[in-house]
Amino acid sequence: MRMPQVNGRYIPNVKAPRTADNEEPAAERAQDFRPVDKGFTKEMAIAEANRCLDCKNPLCVQGCPVNINIPRFIEAIRAEEFGRGLDIIRESSMLPAVCGRVCPQENQCEGVCIMGKRSEPVAIGQLERFLGDQPELASKPAIAPKNGKKVAVVGSGPSGIACAGELARNGFDVTVFEAFFTGGGVLVYGIPEFRLPKAVVKREIDGLQELGVKFEFNSVVGRITDAEELFEQGFDAIYIATGAGLPKLLNIPGENLPNVFFANEYLTRVNLMKANNFPEYDTPTKHGKNVAED
Image (tube, rainbow, N blue to C red):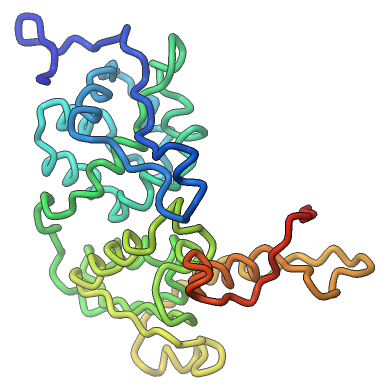
C-alpha cells in the first residue's frame, strides 16, 4: 500500500480509524506469559503512517522527551524505507524497541498529536516499535572519534543505558557497572515478560556493546569500589543511575508479616526467577486467590 498522493503531494487518510493493536486473543493470552501485543505488520504500519497529518509544526516532537523527529520516520514508513526510518529514530534514541513498547506515549507524543483533536492520535509508539524490531535494517551508527575521556555509569536501567549509548556515540570510553547479573535494570526485573520480553532488552544491550560500551555485571559500586577509587582508575566522570530500587515504608502495623511483599521485591522474584514459567520453575512467592494491594 503506497502512500496516497495528488500531484506528487502526500494526502493523509484522515478518515481512517486508528489501526487496532495486534493483540493475542484474551482467552489465549490469559493462559501464559507470552507477549500480549505482537506488534504491527508491514501493512498495518503503512496504513497507520498514512493517517499522519505531516504537520508543519509537529507537536509530537515537542511532546517527545528526546525530540525524535517523528514526522520524518513516519514519512519513511509511508515510503516503505524502513531502514531509513530506523536511522532517523536512532539519531535521538538508541532504544526504539524498548521505548516503542513502554514509553507513556499517551501522555507524550500521542498525547499532543493534532490528529487526536479530530479523532484518535496516530499510533506513534507502535510505529516506533515496528521499526525498532527490525534492527538489521539500520545503518551502522556514526561514532565520533575517541576523545580520550572515560566515564563510569553506575546502573544499567533506562537512564544508564541511554546515557551510555549517547556517550559512546560521541567518542567517550564508557563502562557500565551493574549490580545484577544482567543488564536492563527495571526493564528486566520490573516489567513482566508479556509487556517487554527480556530478549528485546538483551538485543538493545547487545547493540550498545557493539558501539563499544563495556558492562561489568555483579558489580555493586559502593562495595567493590567507590567514587574515589573509580577516579583513581582513570575515569573522568561518573554518572549515577541507580534508580529507585528501595521501597517506601508505610510504617503501619503488620507490614513486615509473612506474605507481605513490596512491589520491587515481588517483581524481582517473578521476573528474574522465571516465575513466568511456573510450575517448571518454582519461584518463592505465595499464590492465592484473595490478594490485597495498596
